[in-house]
Length: 319
Image 1: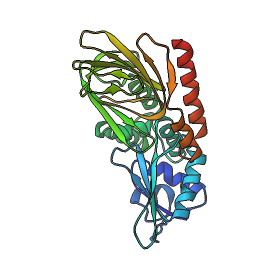
Image 2 (image 1 turned 90 degrees about the vertical axis):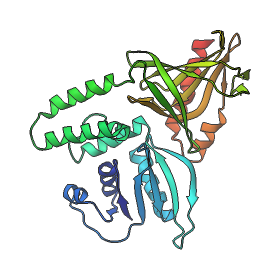
Image 3 (image 1 turned 60 degrees about the horizontal axis):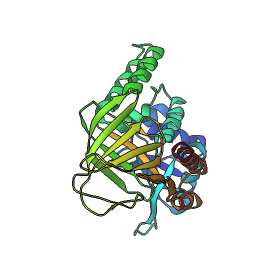
Image 4 (image 1 turned 180 degrees about the vertical axis):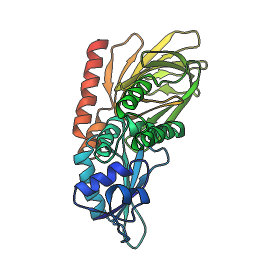
């Protein structure tokens, strides 16, 4: 199988492909230098970043795409395959699907990349996050490659910087809520009203009418929500209030470990949730979605089990 790889995950993915006995097609200059590979043959599979950089598109012959997926599941076990596999209308009968890399998958890719070249902590987290973070990573790694700074010093500085990276108090951010069906739901603008120790609380106004999903509580003009987000936590909690501040209910969304940047927060919604309308007992909802995704081979079993463990812990805490 010949694979062409482009984008911010390319070094880690090329390492993965070569480790598993496959070939690289049309390598870039840096891929040639790092791996000593050279091939101009047409690829069986093409891999490139999605627009938001938190996932990759995989395109190619069905049997080759399936082999690439097998490799990803084995060596990057926190990968989540979102949306449906698309059958493309072309003579080759190619298919396309999206492999999402939540935080743990990014860290697994860091480990693969570090087998090839010096890699700062949270390399792919930074590269996916923003242009400024990506440039900072490239600059730091170039300094190390040229022997201008000590790797240990950079490692410590990077780890400290990332641990403190949270949106600024008073700033307006987006919450990017990625679904297992491939949709990205952007919530916001949300104003940061509190932060400390890797936790932020954001406030947003509720627009529209109807009822709150899962809570079955009516929405009213002037309602607002306070969402609490903790770095690397596997759930968010949103508390809904009426115009006069009366509580309406709590919604605990179980997700992949929360990734927090200066202007947005990102995670993959794992489907299962815990809800507690005000004055009522909590309950678990939407349990079928993660089970169906797991049965279809899209959601790793260990992540599904962890999601249900988190739901059970929340129930114990809230009851």
